[in-house]
Length: 135
Image 1 (cartoon, rainbow, N blue to C red):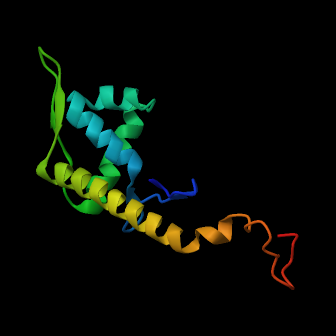
Image 2: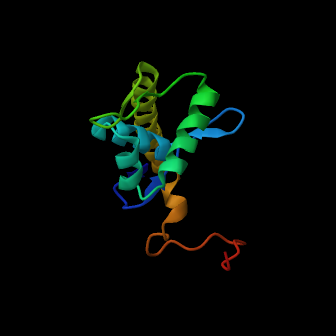
């Protein structure tokens, strides 16, 4: 997420969760939100320009690393199949989005402390002596 301060400078933060490998980040969070909203893995994957197979691989990796099912799958039949988030899936999405917001706020606070290092010096203020102007 990005946090813009009054100078117009943005601090970007991308949250990913790791265990043996990276298993949860913005992509799977969006995928799970789309599954929640559409009731369909296929529709969620299509909405992200992702193959159904790739969506399944992403979900399976996260489930393996978390040790919990993230979606409930109902096989097709007369009315077709459907999917919904499990309690663990809903908690993961909610917690991830809350963590992103908190990191965005923290990034904005850090940016306030360091932003002058990324802005041109005010008119009349000389460049520090000995500083390499080629940077």
